[in-house]
Length: 267
Image (cartoon, rainbow, N blue to C red; front, top):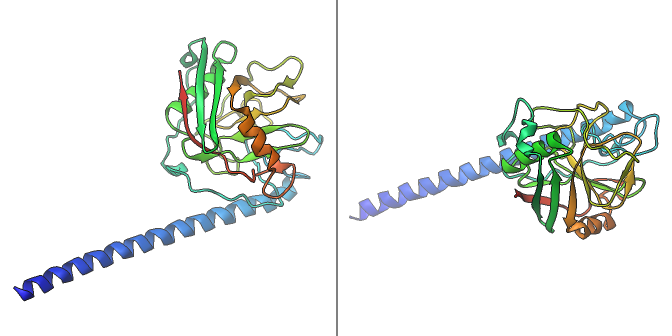
């Protein structure tokens, strides 16, 4: 009997040891992946100095204009290394697509919805009439949970006033597997009132993808961005993030206050 109990304890001890070793190995892999991600982001940031005169979070300043611009790629400050949060699920485990959704998904109507964040809820409407492709894109990604657990990676506090979200790699270089155009519902006067929801993009007009921005003060651009929605409640949450500034203390960079998107729901 004693021998059987000893054998049972030994088996349990070995199982516990194996579980502990698996946990240690998993933690090592996670730390290694975080280190690789940090090195990659830092390399992109340093390389950005040769690519543009002053690199901004969204490649926001080009060599011919001092106006920061929401762009879809290259959005890493040369003076900062963004802190890459652990996303759940990680980017590589999320849905990817070969083409944008059919604009018919927007149904040619107004939608209402709520972005549940780590700071509270942001309510909004979507314009499926005037921006059917951009609205369909937002609906598809929201329904699929594409942004669940992701963080908004850019805040600007001078010249333009936006919180930008949607980059799962936190450096603005990713997309859902596609890009689309043309631009839709561009304000004729170039003014984007507080609460405007619009698609971020690179220089090409057909480079819209998975990133979007929300203006928390009226902003103006000479180049256009597809306006697909309007915040109706909760804008003060973004104003608070802007008041706390960026990680590096600049006017364009990673928010000092982390904003995590928990879920986006639509009606």
